[in-house]
Amino acid sequence: MTLELNLLQERELGRLIDYERATCTVNGELVYRCAFPYRPDDDLQCELIERGALARRADERRGSVVAITSDGYSYFPAKDREEAETRRRSRREVRLVALSALFSAVCMAVGFLLGRMA
Image 1 (cartoon, rainbow, N blue to C red):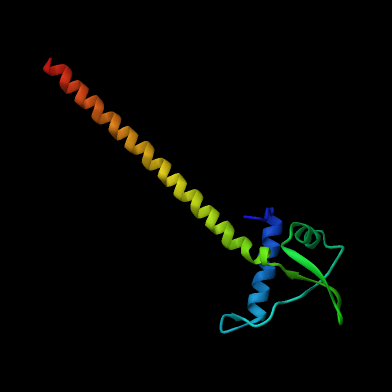
Image 2 (image 1 turned 180 degrees about the vertical axis):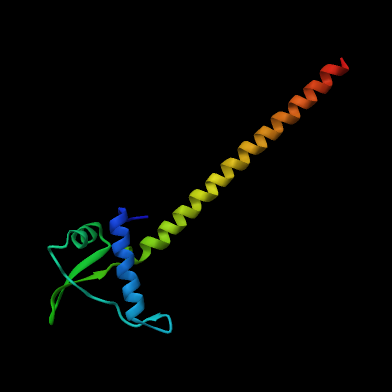
């Protein structure tokens, strides 16, 4: 994942993406991308611009505007993939520990049986 966002930044980015999907799509297809007004006094917007989730650009009619970058769009899918990979790794480690415990129990049982036979 290329972006590192805190919880407030994630929520704001999610809100902007949701707004764009709600207003700029037809039958689930993105028709155009929203441009949001640039507000230099908005610390959260400035942080998202610094992180690369939003990009500032000049607009002939409205002055400066911000738009969601490709990194901004890919943030949530990448985060979901990373979390899924973490869960997969965790389940794998649990299986390895369980198999090790089972193997050691079998070895103890075999050792006990061999000790009784001697």
